[in-house]
Image 1 (spheres, rainbow, N blue to C red):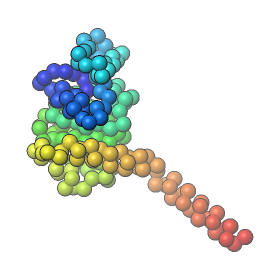
Image 2: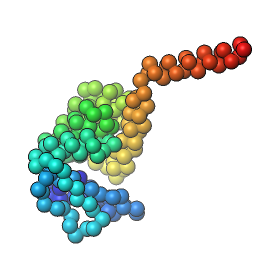
Image 3: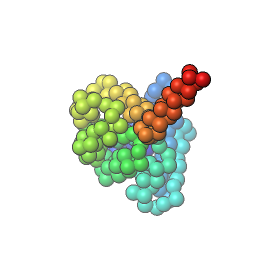
Image 4: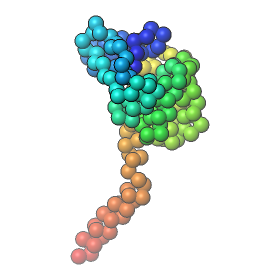
Length: 179
């Protein structure tokens, strides 16, 4: 997360993480010179970055600190995080049901569904990412992110390499059988 501002979704995300049976670690990524957030909670770690520009800090965080991105609501920073993650080959799950920057990212992803979601989600699942929030939405977002991450890892191995290795193994097996 990047703020404790009550007008952003971040404090609610932190509250969700902290209320889980096994709370996950939370990092607040801040631009250079920003004031610390959530100082009353020692389980939350503030991480300052080297730039004093928030937009550059968001891009640096996505490039170097994340395996995947879930974007919800937001403004320009959410759009930047979502698009930067996509362009860096990270799995992105935009929940557009609250509007804002995440809905814009969802629209971009919907225009190129197979590449954006690495072929991991069906059209129906993608369409549900722009629907109202429900009781199981958070779990669904995490499940979608995990599935996209698995497909992204598989997609990082080029089909030509996979085909070449398979043919090489078959040829080696054929030679072994003949000999």
